Image (tube, rainbow, N blue to C red; front, side, top):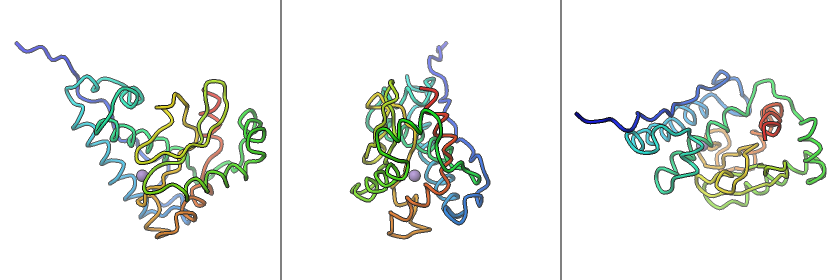
Length: 202
Ligand code: MN
């Protein structure tokens, strides 16, 4: 008798928390269909394929990201990055942070607009594909990070707060080569209430 040591991977595709056309005109239904159903779901499918019946299969996604490298890391990080990305938007977003997060942003960046400018600039400067993050350490100190490919703040021991996807698949259908406009459109539907929830959980 063979003892089955490892479970089937528990990772699943998180449903969009809004309709495909809910973020128009900033992010189109066509972009969300491709981005969520093809790109994100593709990373999840590949991760399942790579981790079923391995030591990773029963781990929460965050732990797979922290413990892996190579193809497993790339697909696990992309799965997690996209969960954070889609979840942070809303058709009725709160347009500004409040409370502790607002105070930290004003202390470190001067204003929310300055933070957005800093992140948009990092996104346009990032060569090739990757992510720009607002992240925080355990003390709530904020960092803007620019990461190539599947890069995530988790590998720096930081907590992700805002995920800006600057892979071409995130904006090319709607904004073609103009990455800056694609990023600015993401901030239009960013729900600061969700960013605050992430910050207040630290
Ligand atoms: Mn993406």
